[in-house]
Amino acid sequence: MDVIEKLAVLGDAARFDVACTSSGSERSASSGAGVGSTVAGGICHTWTDDGRCISLLKVLLTNHCDYDCAYCRNRSSNDVPRAAFRPEELAMLTIEFYRRNYIEGLFLSSGVVRDADHTMGLMIETLRLLREVHLFRGYVHVKVIPGASPEAVERIGRLADRVSVNVELPSTRSLLSLAPQKKPADIEAPMAYIADRRSANREELVRYRGAPTFAPAGQSTQLIVGATPDRDVQILRLSKNLYSRFDMKRVFFSAYIPTNAHPLLPALTSAPPLLREHRLYQADWLMRFYRFDVEEIVDSGSPDLDLDLDPKSAWAMRHLDRFPVDVNRADYETLLRVPGIGVLSAQRVVAARRLGRLRTEDLRPLGIVMKRARFFLTAAGRYAAERIPQAAELRVLLADKCGQKGYAPFQLRIEDLPVVAEGA
Image (cartoon, rainbow, N blue to C red; front, side):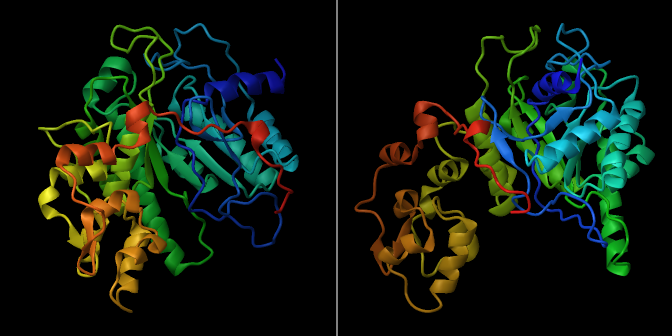
């Protein structure tokens, strides 16, 4: 099997991993030598046919795997085409693709061969060749194998920009049922090491500007949604815990795509729960940037997100007694809880009202989405909408197209992307 045939197999095998972002890192060489860039916009992206955003060179080192995780297409018992790159093959392929302006970085994962450290050793050698032989300074995101030793994690963290260890499933019970070879402790140990090591590295860089960096773009993880009966409240509580314990940059949610038959998995004919994935991302955003707590979004009494309403609108519908709010008097935290007002528009409101009293016609230019916000705001003594709707009518008005007609993500094909000149 030649390199291109391997790429076809291993590129397709990697498409179910959604955790690929390139923000937060800038890797440079003091001598100015080398190729590639990690600056914002440096990674070319495309969209898969199921709506996921992926890096253009996103591959597995190998899809041979000793594990037999029920949900995984590459599990050991599956009859699928198998392939493996040698480290020098993948390093050269990455460089050649970069020089042809096909990519700006690498997203690398792998099946588990022999054991975690053996697999990590092959990935480390690939990155060593890229960084030290080919002088590649572009963005690299590597999936750490659960159970990897601290020494392996240390080496990979010095070579990669972002590292991640997939949690995979929202509960220990689900993990033990569908992936019995993966132990929660084997997942948490590398996460904890990465978090502690990044904290120490920040202190090193304060004292010594020339100190080597460790995973400068941080760590992330991924949860599969819809493969198990776990509720949204469990998923969001776990997400909050991961952010607080392990200093996560992102927790990614991946709608389960049925690829294997198993008594505990959804039927192969089931559609991926893409709308649920979308709502979880919205809820995650509320926790990270809008100062919402998990229990305000979902709780034991209402354990799942409303698929018809975005989570902020759903919260507002449960707290109509707090609205409408006066845009000229409400504090910043209150503004953040108004549907249609984002972080930037809330900051603009606070700044603009220092200069004068805001009117309803002043709100749209500040970035407020009046289609939603008008039902929850007053300005200069005037209600922003034509009239106050009843709760049932308001719910219909707030329901977005995703909830009304099913979620159909925007799709972009590789051939639709413009060709960007190297160095642009």
